[in-house]
Image 1 (cartoon, rainbow, N blue to C red):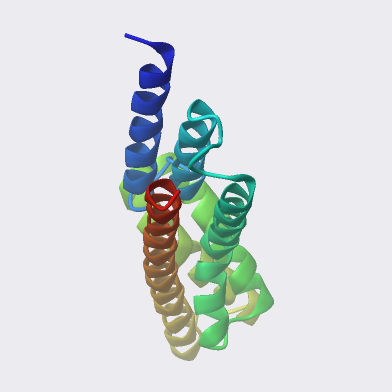
Image 2 (cartoon, rainbow, N blue to C red):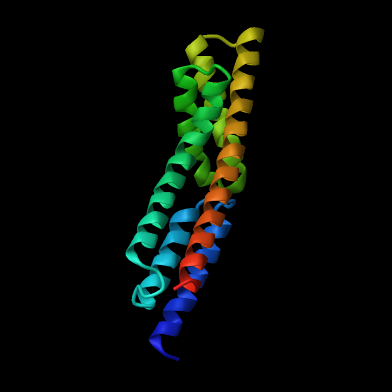
Amino acid sequence: MEAQSIYYAVAVLLVLAGLAGILLPALPGLPLVFAGMLLAAWAGGFEQIGGWTVLLLAALTLISIGVDFLASAAGAKRVGASRLAVVGALVGTVVGLFFGLVGVFVGPFVGAVFGELVARRGIGHRDLGQATRVGIGTWFGIFVGTVLKITIAFAMVGIFALAWWTD
């Protein structure tokens, strides 16, 4: 088996792992998709996939990283979260990664709720109600972020395929 075929096979595996990583924790989804596409472009000597296409794919990857980090914080902020709740959502997202799939969903919620309660300095009925709204807003932000990442992934695959077959 020649080296180019091996590179293409590894590139396909990277793209598939990246697509799975959009939904699964601990896998850097779209960066893996980009790495696979870059490897395929390199293996083909950048003949089908040129520098401008690679640059566009890299820009989409960077946008996806920003979406990933800001989605839960934006969802929390949308429902009137305090600055501490937004920080809590971000911290909860990072900490949640260490606890698998459950942690990815629970971490941002708990972080946002805890941050909001600290900011309000209380756990009364009103405080807890607002903190819960902030947690739900965080979840909504994560959902929107995931939808955006899936959209970016399909755009990347489409751009790559179009560049590959319209040489």
